[in-house]
Image 1 (tube, rainbow, N blue to C red):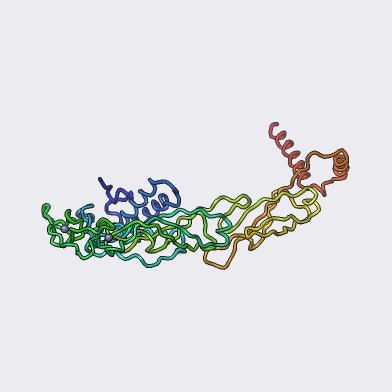
Image 2 (image 1 turned 90 degrees about the vertical axis):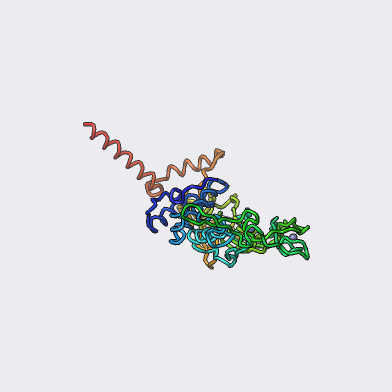
Length: 385
Ligand SMILES: [Zn+2]
Ligand SMILES: [Zn+2]
């Protein structure tokens, strides 16, 4: 697999300083962030590629190694971190970016241990997509989810060796997991091809897991969805991802939340917007209109006398909760004055009579409009002369 040059990935010159690298990383990370490109596999690949490039170039030591040896500097085991390689590095970058973009609201738990030596690789991160309603986002909920995931084999405790046997030290590398070979002036270390860096080989595999050290199980997890989550909010459950390889640390589980569209409310941050029709008479004389709240109650909104169609009335504190705080957004009710239809003869007479009594006092906007129109035509006429 031909890997792209890290500088090329970030769109920077080789000699670029840290600020330039960081700025261009941030720009690209915002552009390709999986939350901004839901369901786009290309974005996920690009995002991972950008993260990996930055992870190396931001570290002066790693960058020096990369400048000298290129990608070969980080092939399995060469980076000095053991078998975990970029999986773990990627996860930490991922969490950093997440904190940057979302204000750190999700926090970072434990579970970031790098894989030790001896092929104990960190398990993969898992993604779980969950749809919730706006009401559930309002009140928060405890969700039960079943995830098929590979867990450490109970029979061999993750070693992969049959009960009563032990993995044998690899003869190719003598247990080091790496082999050295000279290339020009340099001696490069490569992952041992016989044991894939584990340093040991299994002669009698465990019958329960076939030597993999992991088995697939469906796990039931309880997930707390806090009140105030938004569409695209991600919840990280440290250590709930796939089991590590041969006793390595488990990956993390990310719950990606999507909030279903609501029939009545539109949401903008913590504020909710809805529309309510009112009659022409209520608009003119004032009154109340009943609207539902997201909390499942009904509330009366006071309509002031002389309310115009399109007017937004604010109900302070009736919006969504703000994540991890005690405050709430507002609810805005936009009133729409409904023009009456299918009038009877009598109704028409009354309206015509009403119209006859109207004046510049009752219809200031119409009056202003006609005055402006008159000015407009007079102005246009004088320009032409
Ligand atoms: Zn086993
Ligand atoms: Zn070996």
